[in-house]
Image (cartoon, helix red, strand yellow):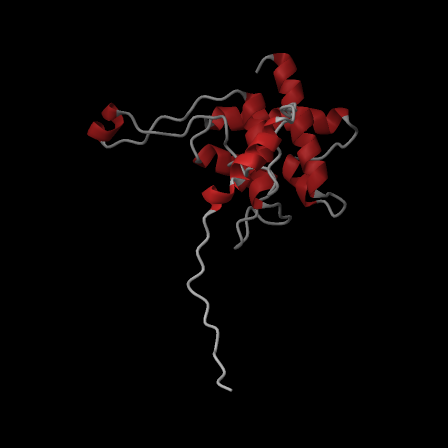
Length: 178
């Protein structure tokens, strides 16, 4: 008896012929539209990192500065803003004791103020007035030291203490309108 091998033809799918898609769409159309709940978007990757000088204009030379080959004029900031920027700079680059800055870029309190000045925010007079506010806060809180640098380099001082000091001095300067 001869055996015949059954070889099927090509498989052809025609979804339109069955009407299955139209039937599913008709079924889904009978459901009420879902109520859209508005919630704030929270990025799953965390918040966006902002630079330490966010919100303050960048130092840009004017046309006259470029023509005369001179340094750009510093951006005027208040004493309170200078102290806030110093705290932000410390937070962004790190804090160190016993040195103005180290090889990794960390700075002390004075180094942060110098860096803010070097980036073009304020004048040397702004830094001097800011240091006076820091000294006032140190003395009124019962820490009579010769300078803010002595407080920065004291063995018991932590980075949080320096930030707290800068915040209080900034608030004092803001209350005085400077």
